Image (cartoon, rainbow, N blue to C red; front, side):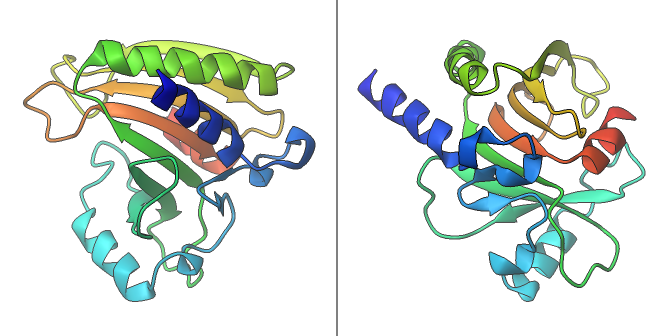
Length: 193
Protein backbone atom coordinates (compact mmCIF):
# COMPACT_ATOMS: atom_id res chain seq x y z
CA UNK A 1 0.00 0.00 0.00
CA UNK A 2 2.87 2.37 0.80
CA UNK A 3 4.31 1.82 -2.68
CA UNK A 4 0.92 2.62 -4.27
CA UNK A 5 0.60 5.84 -2.25
CA UNK A 6 4.10 6.91 -3.23
CA UNK A 7 3.36 6.11 -6.86
CA UNK A 8 0.12 8.11 -6.79
CA UNK A 9 1.95 11.05 -5.22
CA UNK A 10 4.52 10.91 -8.01
CA UNK A 11 1.82 10.57 -10.68
CA UNK A 12 0.14 13.72 -9.43
CA UNK A 13 3.32 15.71 -9.33
CA UNK A 14 4.60 14.44 -12.66
CA UNK A 15 1.97 16.79 -14.07
CA UNK A 16 3.93 19.93 -13.41
CA UNK A 17 1.49 22.70 -14.14
CA UNK A 18 1.64 26.11 -12.55
CA UNK A 19 -1.66 26.52 -10.70
CA UNK A 20 -2.92 23.58 -12.79
CA UNK A 21 -3.62 25.81 -15.79
CA UNK A 22 -6.18 24.98 -18.44
CA UNK A 23 -3.63 24.69 -21.29
CA UNK A 24 -2.80 21.05 -22.02
CA UNK A 25 0.76 22.06 -23.00
CA UNK A 26 1.43 22.99 -19.36
CA UNK A 27 1.24 19.36 -18.26
CA UNK A 28 4.16 16.96 -18.33
CA UNK A 29 4.77 13.26 -18.01
CA UNK A 30 8.35 12.55 -16.91
CA UNK A 31 9.27 16.11 -17.94
CA UNK A 32 7.88 15.78 -21.50
CA UNK A 33 5.12 18.11 -22.77
CA UNK A 34 2.82 18.33 -25.78
CA UNK A 35 4.48 20.45 -28.45
CA UNK A 36 8.03 19.55 -27.42
CA UNK A 37 10.42 18.18 -30.02
CA UNK A 38 11.07 14.46 -29.60
CA UNK A 39 14.69 15.32 -30.51
CA UNK A 40 15.03 16.80 -27.01
CA UNK A 41 14.68 13.26 -25.61
CA UNK A 42 16.04 10.95 -28.33
CA UNK A 43 18.46 11.10 -31.22
CA UNK A 44 17.12 11.25 -34.77
CA UNK A 45 18.66 7.83 -35.40
CA UNK A 46 16.72 6.35 -32.44
CA UNK A 47 13.51 7.97 -33.73
CA UNK A 48 14.02 6.54 -37.23
CA UNK A 49 14.57 3.06 -35.78
CA UNK A 50 11.29 3.37 -33.86
CA UNK A 51 9.49 4.67 -36.96
CA UNK A 52 10.55 1.55 -38.86
CA UNK A 53 9.81 -0.80 -35.94
CA UNK A 54 6.32 0.67 -35.43
CA UNK A 55 5.36 1.16 -39.09
CA UNK A 56 2.27 -1.06 -38.69
CA UNK A 57 1.02 0.87 -35.65
CA UNK A 58 -2.54 2.13 -36.05
CA UNK A 59 -2.97 -0.22 -39.01
CA UNK A 60 -6.75 0.23 -38.71
CA UNK A 61 -6.41 3.99 -39.45
CA UNK A 62 -5.02 6.26 -42.17
CA UNK A 63 -1.68 6.06 -40.27
CA UNK A 64 -1.30 9.85 -39.94
CA UNK A 65 0.26 9.44 -36.48
CA UNK A 66 2.70 6.94 -34.99
CA UNK A 67 3.77 6.14 -31.44
CA UNK A 68 7.44 6.20 -30.52
CA UNK A 69 8.76 4.55 -27.37
CA UNK A 70 11.00 7.00 -25.54
CA UNK A 71 14.20 5.53 -24.14
CA UNK A 72 15.69 7.81 -21.56
CA UNK A 73 17.04 5.47 -18.95
CA UNK A 74 14.93 4.78 -15.92
CA UNK A 75 11.87 6.90 -15.29
CA UNK A 76 10.74 8.23 -11.92
CA UNK A 77 7.13 7.07 -12.10
CA UNK A 78 6.35 4.97 -15.17
CA UNK A 79 7.68 1.72 -16.59
CA UNK A 80 7.52 3.06 -20.16
CA UNK A 81 7.03 6.36 -21.94
CA UNK A 82 5.66 6.79 -25.47
CA UNK A 83 5.21 9.91 -27.56
CA UNK A 84 2.98 10.32 -30.59
CA UNK A 85 4.25 12.20 -33.63
CA UNK A 86 3.11 12.57 -37.23
CA UNK A 87 4.51 10.15 -39.80
CA UNK A 88 5.17 13.00 -42.22
CA UNK A 89 8.59 14.55 -42.51
CA UNK A 90 8.54 17.00 -39.60
CA UNK A 91 12.20 17.83 -38.93
CA UNK A 92 11.38 18.64 -35.28
CA UNK A 93 9.28 15.52 -34.59
CA UNK A 94 6.68 17.56 -32.68
CA UNK A 95 4.91 15.63 -29.88
CA UNK A 96 1.09 15.44 -30.07
CA UNK A 97 0.56 12.98 -27.24
CA UNK A 98 2.64 11.64 -24.36
CA UNK A 99 1.84 8.47 -22.37
CA UNK A 100 3.22 7.02 -19.18
CA UNK A 101 2.54 3.28 -18.95
CA UNK A 102 2.48 0.39 -16.48
CA UNK A 103 2.09 -3.29 -17.42
CA UNK A 104 -0.79 -5.18 -15.75
CA UNK A 105 -1.73 -8.73 -16.61
CA UNK A 106 -4.60 -8.76 -14.10
CA UNK A 107 -7.46 -6.43 -15.18
CA UNK A 108 -8.69 -6.06 -11.57
CA UNK A 109 -5.29 -4.68 -10.47
CA UNK A 110 -5.31 -2.23 -13.37
CA UNK A 111 -8.81 -0.99 -12.56
CA UNK A 112 -7.90 -0.56 -8.88
CA UNK A 113 -4.91 1.63 -9.74
CA UNK A 114 -6.95 3.52 -12.35
CA UNK A 115 -9.63 4.30 -9.77
CA UNK A 116 -7.05 5.67 -7.31
CA UNK A 117 -5.39 7.88 -9.94
CA UNK A 118 -8.75 9.17 -11.24
CA UNK A 119 -9.82 10.03 -7.69
CA UNK A 120 -6.71 12.16 -7.22
CA UNK A 121 -6.92 13.76 -10.67
CA UNK A 122 -10.58 14.62 -10.02
CA UNK A 123 -9.39 16.91 -7.24
CA UNK A 124 -6.92 18.64 -9.56
CA UNK A 125 -9.30 18.88 -12.52
CA UNK A 126 -12.47 19.54 -10.53
CA UNK A 127 -13.77 22.08 -13.08
CA UNK A 128 -12.91 19.95 -16.10
CA UNK A 129 -15.44 17.78 -17.94
CA UNK A 130 -14.96 14.11 -17.04
CA UNK A 131 -15.85 11.37 -19.52
CA UNK A 132 -15.86 7.60 -18.86
CA UNK A 133 -15.94 4.79 -21.40
CA UNK A 134 -15.84 1.01 -21.70
CA UNK A 135 -15.51 -0.47 -25.19
CA UNK A 136 -13.88 -3.10 -27.37
CA UNK A 137 -10.48 -2.30 -28.85
CA UNK A 138 -10.38 -1.45 -32.55
CA UNK A 139 -7.07 -3.33 -32.67
CA UNK A 140 -8.94 -6.62 -32.03
CA UNK A 141 -11.61 -7.44 -34.63
CA UNK A 142 -12.95 -10.28 -32.43
CA UNK A 143 -14.10 -7.78 -29.79
CA UNK A 144 -12.44 -9.76 -26.98
CA UNK A 145 -9.97 -6.97 -26.04
CA UNK A 146 -11.43 -4.25 -23.82
CA UNK A 147 -10.56 -0.63 -23.07
CA UNK A 148 -11.86 1.12 -19.95
CA UNK A 149 -10.97 4.77 -19.56
CA UNK A 150 -11.63 8.07 -17.87
CA UNK A 151 -10.65 11.38 -19.45
CA UNK A 152 -10.57 14.95 -18.27
CA UNK A 153 -11.40 17.09 -21.30
CA UNK A 154 -10.12 20.65 -21.65
CA UNK A 155 -12.02 23.44 -23.37
CA UNK A 156 -9.33 23.84 -26.05
CA UNK A 157 -9.78 20.18 -27.03
CA UNK A 158 -6.93 18.34 -25.35
CA UNK A 159 -7.34 15.83 -22.54
CA UNK A 160 -5.68 13.88 -19.77
CA UNK A 161 -6.83 10.27 -19.58
CA UNK A 162 -6.27 7.18 -17.45
CA UNK A 163 -6.96 4.00 -19.42
CA UNK A 164 -6.85 0.26 -18.71
CA UNK A 165 -6.18 -1.98 -21.72
CA UNK A 166 -7.09 -5.65 -21.41
CA UNK A 167 -5.89 -7.35 -24.59
CA UNK A 168 -6.90 -10.92 -25.43
CA UNK A 169 -4.06 -13.44 -25.73
CA UNK A 170 -4.25 -13.57 -29.56
CA UNK A 171 -3.52 -9.81 -29.78
CA UNK A 172 0.20 -9.14 -29.73
CA UNK A 173 0.03 -6.25 -27.23
CA UNK A 174 0.74 -5.89 -23.54
CA UNK A 175 -2.20 -5.16 -21.25
CA UNK A 176 -1.78 -2.34 -18.80
CA UNK A 177 -2.52 1.17 -17.60
CA UNK A 178 -1.78 4.36 -19.53
CA UNK A 179 -1.82 7.92 -18.23
CA UNK A 180 -1.97 10.11 -21.34
CA UNK A 181 -1.87 13.78 -22.26
CA UNK A 182 -3.18 14.46 -25.80
CA UNK A 183 -3.69 17.62 -27.81
CA UNK A 184 -6.81 18.54 -29.79
CA UNK A 185 -5.50 17.52 -33.23
CA UNK A 186 -4.50 14.03 -32.12
CA UNK A 187 -7.78 13.59 -30.19
CA UNK A 188 -9.88 14.52 -33.23
CA UNK A 189 -7.94 12.07 -35.38
CA UNK A 190 -8.21 9.32 -32.78
CA UNK A 191 -11.97 9.86 -32.41
CA UNK A 192 -12.45 8.89 -36.07
CA UNK A 193 -11.23 5.36 -35.27
